[in-house]
Length: 463
Picture 1 (cartoon, rainbow, N blue to C red):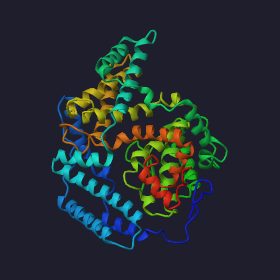
Picture 2 (spheres, helix red, strand yellow):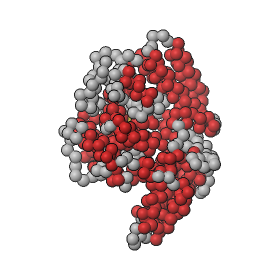
Picture 3 (cartoon, rainbow, N blue to C red):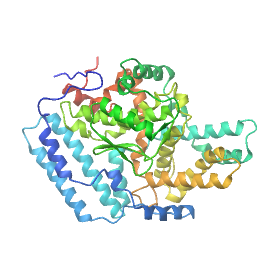
Picture 4 (tube, rainbow, N blue to C red):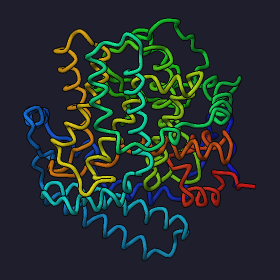
């Protein structure tokens, strides 16, 4: 069977998916607990202590809070037993069986990561971390370094620049000079960007369908203006999710709701790209279509799908802007760079050994000081406190699970690496490669995923 979309959506199913029993069984075996990246978070009280240690130049551990290790070991054993029973079954299509084998291996690795962190076993934590996400790409890391260093050069060469900003930029150049690569590796070529953007912005294209019956404001988008737009976009993609307050300032889709900050006031392009293009109309649309396609597992996500899936959602943010250069000047792009830089530096990419948490703090904070000094050149105290907050917020996110003596939680490197791989796919296969990802939670740059989904008719065969 070949699956065809009507607009954004596959038609509703009138019969169970071929793996519905397997999917339900695996979900029951996993039980409750939430996403692993949430389970790795430490309490706010511990975060405050970690921040204080870094500010004092000391290392600090972000291994997970006290947990019932017996429960984790029971889940570990249950998943391994589920896998053994899967492999013994003769009534499951071999290709379906392989997809589930890969997925349960990822689930086992995630539980192993939690166990390792709770036991301060950083060898095990790194092993399972890399099993899921792979090591950071050194060329991409050095490209990100070059991007930041180039920003520093521009600040230094700007006429009538404030001396404090020049000094902060020079500190960055001194620190990064020997680590630079080629920032050009991170940017899509102009023709590919324009082709993908046109495909998204055309009449009856992605954004036209997502924004059907929506009138965008001309100024910034507040909660009062934005929430009704979110509700319409959610309906436009065939979802019934509600809207709830997020704990902090992040946007996400979780459970039965789209989570957004309790208060927000965003430029229109930022709101459309992040709130609609990235979260609602990429991640939630993937789930909706996955539930309508041939395989239930595609709604939950094939193994390691985040490696390309998050990068594809970032592309959706980028094409809202006229050019990639325009997107490359906003804070969001810098934050994506900072995530990869912090993870790579902590992991020891291009170095003799991994870096401790205090070393990573000093490294990233030097970068953050440059940008904050640029914003507040005559208010050094405010620049210092803002940079301190930004660095701390980033590192409590990307170093969680570690003991502070080296290494990082690798998940957030997928945003930059996925951005690069998705633009390469768009250049190779055409703009349709990006929109193909709306059919479910898989990685459009993963040949294993592509071939399996072609077999079941969800993706077209390549010419």
